[in-house]
Amino acid sequence: MPELPEVETVRRGLVPVLEGAVIARADVNRPDLRWPLPDRMADRLTGRRVTALRRRSKYILADLDSGETLLVHLGMSGRMLISGAQVGRFHHDHPAPQKHDHVVLHMASGARITFNDARRFGAMDLMPTDRASDHMLLKGLGPEPFGNDFNGPYLAGRLKGRKTPIKAALLDQGIVAGLGNIYVAETLYRARISPLRLAGDLDEAEAQRLVPLIREVLAEAIEAGGSSLRDFRQANGELGYFSKHFQVYDREGDPCETPGCSGTVTRTVQSGRSSFWCPACQR
DNA sequence: ATGTGTTCCTGTCCGC
DNA sequence: TGCGGACAGGAACACA
Image 1 (cartoon, rainbow, N blue to C red):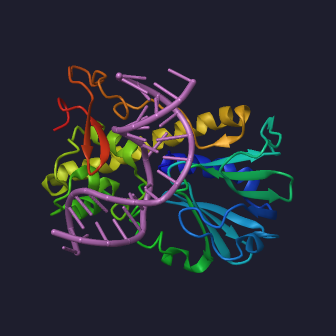
Image 2: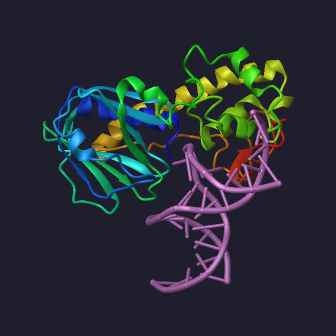
């Protein structure tokens, strides 16, 4: 589920309930997700005020007034459910506990935030805020796609000489942070570049052209998530899932949407993961 | 160093 | 309706 736009959507949805708010109690229902949860996590969260809610790549970072930062990763199937809160016009009653409700934050306001993750590829950790960028999961990350450090010359430089397919290079979080399987597919489609091309075989212009397209694809998805946030609140308070019209992702067999192209969207497995693309217009 | 395949876990969907 | 298999949006890890 969650690539950068979905994580950003979740973050924005949590801001009204979490930022500036106090965690009255934390229920930690199992000792681990993908990795063991931090020692005494419930104690370290109890009574803490969240001073800021940030995002780095696909990670949500909640800075606490204790000087620690709570890192949350949604993995493949992690969800956040808000209940007991007045969010805009909508109020959500507390639902019955569900299978895979692993961590529940009870806010002093009466709101509740439930982290549910069936596949348990998600993660949580606590670290000193001033050393967050040294954390195992954060230290190797490349630039944020919307930051100034991510630009044409930078990307061209990183792709140069790489023998891995461009698909894999864009999925590499050390090159650019936040892209996943969906938005890599959508980006390469708009760039009309085949996912099978070797990264190092792209010329300078092609590499540079990817930068604005990555931003465009992500920005549109964030906008779609933002506009659907209201609907999710209305429905059940769940954050992070929204429908978006993809041009190639999960559309195997559909006609290519590029005007004048009579190609068909194709699925190709690359390093064990599906790539969706149009062999007729992506070269 | 770089590139590739495997693995963690559960749920869903599709064909028989 | 049950059953088996493929597949799922991530990313660390082990190995060539």
